[in-house]
Length: 462
Image (cartoon, rainbow, N blue to C red; front, side):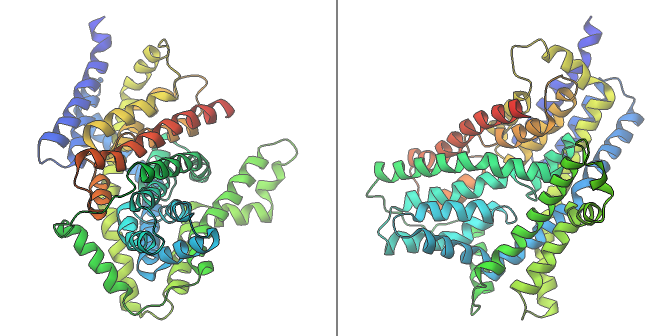
């Protein structure tokens, strides 16, 4: 009997080693994940050679499906950053919604902008607009800042081509188009909840004034200075051109997803073989759709920028993608080891007897990992790696809902060990610890709780 539980004990040890290495040592998350995968493989009954082979195959298969997409996504995001497209989107929504609705405009802007742009960078770019609106419109800085940050963090967690949800989709074997659509829908009620909280927070602290931020960390000052240098003397692009690189791939991928769904229905099988179906199967594949998006961004948002500078901007984006690709691939390797060793199947047999809705397994694993080590991306990739081999063996679980559960569970209670916690609070000049948590830990937890209801509803519908 004891031998039957050795793989499970080995997995527990592997997770402990992973968390310990990330928290207590200078070992990078990539090496920590590889160490955890090695322990899980050998304790699960694989030989040393089989473990290494499975790690390599799992790493390669995960990146094979999303590596190019992540690279293209960060290239597009970099162009949107330096061109001023993000600011133009914000100004347009503020103009449309009018006075006293600036928080909604900023939340919608964040919801859109953070699909291709990294959340930390997006907040640094747009925060000066928050300060201007607060001063000129006599609005509370806390309300506007939290609304913007909330909109940013939600699509960053749930919607590809952001690297985290892309990696989760690959590990669960979920269609990226379906992942994108589900994430866009699930994020909406969460954004509404965060904005309502932001307005309450403004009423709770009506006289808030930011403290001296001269001691703002060097990395934030440098990032903001680089952005100002990029933008110096440049006119903002039009709203249409600003939105085009974001909307175009979403539309192409959505059309392909609808075609695939219709082709599975009786009487519509011919659709997949038709010229229309074949055309959008090509254009709507994530790689081609994102490649088109990058071309649109380069030629519409940076039409007068010379070739050398354009390539330099695109390569700057790629520099940020390297470590994300490696961590995502390592997460896929851990998942492959659990499947190959049979540990996932063994755990599934035990989990099936628990009084817990199976779709919540990745949700609560992501929640726990997020609370322990802080990074939302690492939390969702780790949760997907551990839970995908388990939930795939359980009846009545839709893998799309399970994948989104892993991304949304990683929203829980952002605090001191999360970089976004410090970006938001330091940019806004908040030094009081209680207020720091009110500003960012509480709204992320509200979004987490709302997303829990959304995940259960999505799983029930699917």
